[in-house]
Amino acid sequence: MVTAEQHIDQKLFPILEQVSDPEIPVLSIMDMGVVRSAVLENDIVKVQITPTYSGCPAMDVIGDDIKKALLDTGYNSEIELILAPAWTTDWITPKGRKALEDYGIAAPLDAEADKGVLLEGKRLVKCTNCTSTNTRLVSQFGSTACKAQFQCDDCQEPFDYFKCLK
Amino acid sequence: MNNNLYKYILGIADNSLILGQRLGELCGHGPSLETDIACTNISLDLFGQVRSYYQYAAKITGNGKSEDDIAMLRKEREYVNVLLVEQPNTDFAYTIGRQFLFDVYHLLFLNELQKSNDLMLSAIAVKSIKEVSYHQRFSSDWVKRLGDGTAESHQKMQDAIDGLWTYTDELFHQTDADKIIVSEGIGVDVTNLKETYYSKVSELLQEATLKTPESKWFQKGGKEGIHTEHLGYLLSDLQYMQRTYPNMEW
Image (cartoon, each protein chain N blue to C red):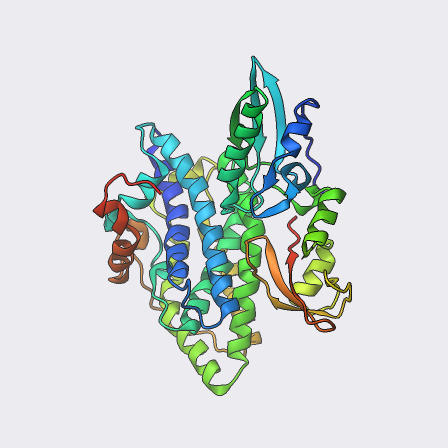
């Protein structure tokens, strides 16, 4: 597991937690793990964010939303996009995983299981509708870069699976 | 500015830009919804990687150029992508063949680039490897599915591999700028990747019941800006808005 320390000023935490991922609105950017640091320096909040996928079009919006949320509470801010260490699905918090599931997106399994379901047709991903694991991969690529398409063979629900990224 | 480093970055990034544009052409035109979405997802990953490279290149020039200037406002001969990635989407087998022949190279290349002593290039490589691993799974799966499929799909996949083979050797050529950047511990010595590349490709082709082409005559020129006739048409599409409405913003 990649461990990279986060430096978040505790009084900024509640503000940042209000900002959600524009493509998965139930998920706070804090639960997503994309904010790597937020510290107050000379009256300016310096925020470092890291992209989930390189081409994620949500990053510009997330940067703007953070700026706005901080400004609304009286802080000016500077946003910096950093690439290292690279984001991993391990940084999604347990609360974030639950929010994903409730929203209808299956949360990422561990790397080995992920390989099994994406390459070997193993049935391990739980249907977000009926919790059956009698599910199959429809396509390795889904509605956004971070997801794959699945379908449940019990209740027939089509749903997204958040791919494991290490 | 370090002119060699600038050229070196373009050499990496232009491949992804042009391939990303080719895949983007399939948006709404893929053979099925799933493959359409997959190709455009891969395109998006490549464009994301390209932005990181061009932003870095723009910073190096120090002349106020932006990532968009580099992407949109060069002339055909100033693009230094390999000939392979500019080849057209003749049919789905060609699209997959081109992707597969590039992905195998791309992953080997990035695995080495992550050891670069240039921290920015190393960070972009580490990030990109995760994405390109998925690309390679996708294209390899389809090579197997088409190669080991019906008689017709087998023939089409074989034709695509045969047709694109002549563009593979260029992946391992080095420009003068490349050699200098490699000697500085920044760049990847691609000549070392060649053997592994061809053995990996052959292994998968065999698994897909396809023949590895025996042709020993290869095309070159892309890395020096000498392209096939296809690139001009691609660029006229890519650059249309910036050429028609200079400085327009989204």
